[in-house]
Image (cartoon, rainbow, N blue to C red; front, side):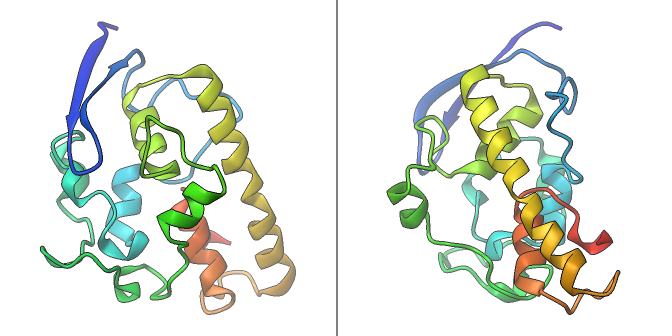
Amino acid sequence: MKKKLVTVNDRTQKRYTYQLTEPVGKNFDPKFKPDLSPKEMLALGVFGGVYMRDCTKEFPKSWFTKAKFQKKGIYTHDPELNYFKINASQPLSVWQKKGWIYKDDPRGWFQWYCRYYMGRRIPAEDIRQIKRWRMMTRHIAQIRAHCRAGDAHCRPRQRQALLHWAYDSRKI
């Protein structure tokens, strides 16, 4: 694969450059098997419709054709835009305070995932983020332990949170 350079100029990053070294959606770490692509997540409804609206130039246009976004000019998230119609997010300030934000991905895990999906690899950061992703399985275990299979009304906050991490909680 020919390596490609991406330069980002959006609300949170100016002149940030990274290299794509893998084909789109391929060659993931064997421990990382997300159920959903970024495009599928955005179409289902995640993050109250405000996350990454100004990143449309960085990623394929097709990711955003069915994305559920808040109206232009509105910067507060709307839980009604989420698949389970519930807020399952913590403010970015909480993520920053806990040290969960990697300097090159100031929006957090989903931004890392989008860039990883596109083919960017940063070995140490990839290991850290995949470990965080794998930790979300505790929510799957709780849903399985407390809900009837397919009952989307049981534990909707946990189900929405799992969608934010590319787990398809509709299938649990």
